[in-house]
Amino acid sequence: MLNIFLICLLTLPGEWLKFHHDLQNTGFQPELKGCLTSDSMRIKWQTPNEGFAKFAIVDINNDNIPEIISGNDIDNKIYNFNGENGSVIWSYTTSGKICSCPALGDLDGDTKLEVVVCSYDSQLYALNTEDGSLLWSYKTGNRVMSSPAIADLDNDSKPEIAVGSLDYTFYAFNGEDGSVLWSYATGSYIWSSPAIADLDNDTKLEVVLGDNKLYALNGEDGSLIWSYPIGVSASPAIADLDNDTKLEIVVGSFDFYALNGEDGSLLWSYTTTGGSVRSSPAIADLDNDTKPEIVFGSDDFNFYALNGEDGSVLWSYATGSHIWSCPAIGDLDSDDKPEIVFASNDTIIRGLNNDGTLLWEFGNSSAGDSDPSIGDVDGDGQLEVVIGGTGILKVLDGGCIAGVQEKVYSRETPRLYAQLSNHKLLFRYSIPKNSDVCLRIYNTAGELVKTLLNTNKVPGEYTLEWTPTGFTSGVYLARLSACGQNCTSKIVVVK
Image (cartoon, rainbow, N blue to C red; front, side):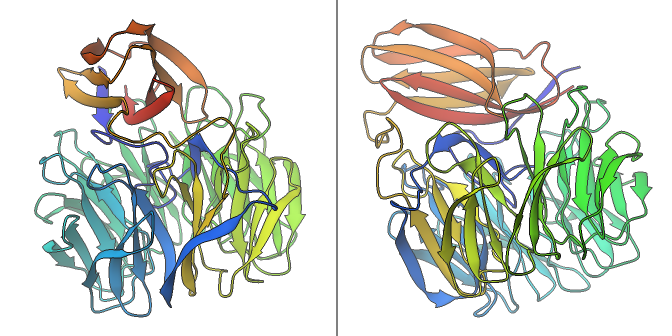
């Protein structure tokens, strides 16, 4: 049986909808290029107030200008910022610090996004993204520091919200009304944020989380599939590390581990030079060998890149302090190679080349607990980097044109919509002028896996139906290229 989940009815390239970008927590944004070099990088805008650490980037109102959604751990508010100029569109006040990353999704089937955020006041909040009004809230038994994830866990075509609490319980909530679908008691504080995927190819999603163990839970009912005895404060990430079409899980503890997703058996482990690993990993193919690498920071002051297949060290980079930041990966300088951005507790944000050499560094007070996010913040078709920490939220821009890209979003922009229909995807797209048109499917490593359309079209609206027969389970990107411009939608295929 083939199931397809539509993540977003319409997405701009580079949206960052939750903690570490996607359901698998890969931290990899493969769609855009930037111009963030040591010579061109600048602060596009920054907030006057402090306390921002984790960010979601998404075009909420379909005006082609993304918004930045972020919680604040000083004034206890969740903010919606205009990505182009940093103006506050709305804010909502909770009664506790907000240290986790918000998540966005269509919770009620109205084709509009809602935002879910957690607070030190023990509550989970679902807010209307148009005005920040409260839709519902749920009070757990202790602080919620885990970042929520939104997915259809029980195959009912409606999204659920998965999140852990310091009340020793992991929850799955009904997205529409906040009622509890199921809960699982772990016996210890849950700091880490969940990763979600079909680990065993049974057409159903599993949830991976950690406390004093790493757990894989059945997404439908919360029953335990397996656990592995390592203490986890970082968040796990999921990918096919060895190209065997099966998913593995990577996570940091006192050492760094890769586990078989299906049964939780150990694939390999790596011991850093000293200290624990509190940095959640990011995953991408750094060296174009068609196999993913894993990057993360350690308390031993080093930042590592490991071979995903066997855990051997590809390279390491020494900083001046502990690294708790969760790295993000993308083409920062438009050289067609992935780069890595992360923060360390020496208050420096660094961009590294794919071989571990320094691309640039940026001094930022109190940046050590910032998880950078990468996306097109201002709608110019290029990526920017959003950073914070306990300090000020800043948007880093290249201040130049990345490669041959230009500002692409206007009334003359081609549009791509996707909708589900009887286990098939129906793409609807519009072309503003006579143009060569390509509709291609990419995997999250940025590799082309299918060309659905490559022809010339006159102006108009069109439809194309597609069933992803033969595709393995995972996240895919549908990209429409026309009139010298691109637009993208994301889908999840589950077999």
